[in-house]
Amino acid sequence: MNERDSETIAGLLEQMGYVAAERGSIAAGGGCTELKDGEAGGGAAGSDGIVMKGGETAGLRAAKDGETGRFAAAAGFEDADVIVVNTCSVRENADNRFFGLLGHIKHVKMRRPDVIVAVCGCMMQQGHIVDKIREKHAWVDLIFGTHNIDALPGLIEEVLARRSEEPAVSVLPERVSMAEGLPAKRRYSFKASVNIMYGCNNYCTYCIVPYTRGREISRDTYSILAEVRELAAAGTKEILLLGQNVNSYAGGAADFADLITMVDKVPGIKRIRFMTSHPKDLSDKLIERFSAAGTSRAESLCPSIHLPIQSGSSRILELMNRHYTKEGYIRLVEKLRAARPDIVISTDFIVGFPGEDEEDFEHTMDVIERVRFDAAFTFLYSPRTGTPAAEYDDPTPPEIKQKRFDRMVKRLNEITLEINRTYVGTVHDVLVEGPSKTDPSMLSGRTFGNKLVNFPAPPDCVAAAAPIGTPLLAMTGVIVPVRITSVNVD
Image 1: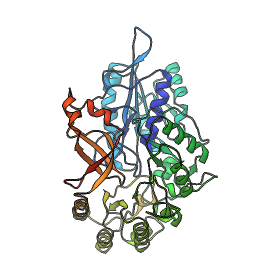
Image 2 (image 1 turned 45 degrees about the horizontal axis):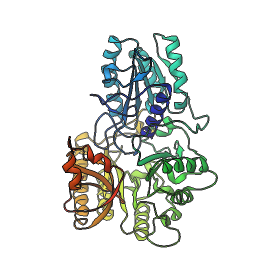
Image 3 (image 1 turned 135 degrees about the horizontal axis):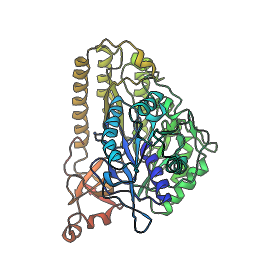
Image 4 (image 1 turned 90 degrees about the vertical axis):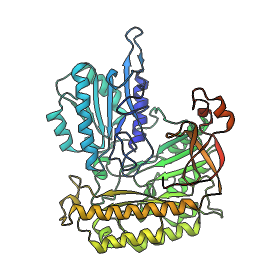
């Protein structure tokens, strides 16, 4: 969710006359600096939120050109006129990194007092975080939350007008209206994320999201479709429908399964993905949309689903307030694979939840063996202030939790490699995302089932590359058939 929010923030600032700074030492360029807990691979920049994976987002930084009076790209973080940090609060590590980043930004602010420093996102919805910023980082100019991003231009104008010695704070307890038609600076032209709802009603005992994102509110179905059509007309091929729990979407004219059918009919859209999906709300109607045959099938719906289980123990799942059991989850997987045998299934696991004992952990290992996930995001439990689980007794020593965690990750990686090896020799349509991050002479993209593939560029692209990688950009957004010759865990 934060990644999509960052695109909106970037769009709003660009509308004001700002442009994104060049890539700097702290965060990537193109959206706003976004901090998370690193579950998707680490780093200070990334996608947000519970499980909203999707790569880096940018540092929204801009500098004014004194000669023309217009805003132009800053050479780096230290040259910016505006620094916006968009935060995630899923895990404690994100909090620690955020305050570490503020320490670096303070040096910039001390050298250049006129730079505007704004902090926003989920962390700002927590009173104790705001209090800490006011007390120890009063040089921050603006604090705003998740429910009033659309007000950012006015808030910046207020900061410019008042220049107070303490932060201006605009944090709303809940979303009072659904702002539509906001500008967005999209990171990609060929794929885009579309919010279909905000907030969460589930109140899992370990999770801070319902307190920072508020109660569920769904966007109007036809507003979503209008955005998708606009994106398709601009050349977007892949749509990612976003929500904390997309399965509970209720936009008036459609439920979530119906919405997928509607998006599937938009000309130009070749791939539809969604996240995140709560197991307790995964309906048979939605599963039918994955079907490899039949009238209910959505042709553009990718055969992949992220279905967080968190634990394989029904006892722990009850303590987590997840509203499903181990066996109930496995039945859902069986239904999905019956509808679409080639479906790619990923999940989340939390190890070390308060009270988890060896028997509970063995239930988790049993689920891993029975389901055989294509991929998993794994976490050691991190208590979040304000959640019920933070008050639970937790007698398990950290070294035992770490030992279990390491054992689980090892087995998950083994299974992922075993599954990936079955792809060797097969041909898949790959949506090219650009040059590989590890080898710029190679292309990188994803299969219909969301598997990451690195492959050699066509010979004419490589031969023309000067410098290496430049002509490869022309293939970005193109769907090409690729034969898989070797695999790894990633």
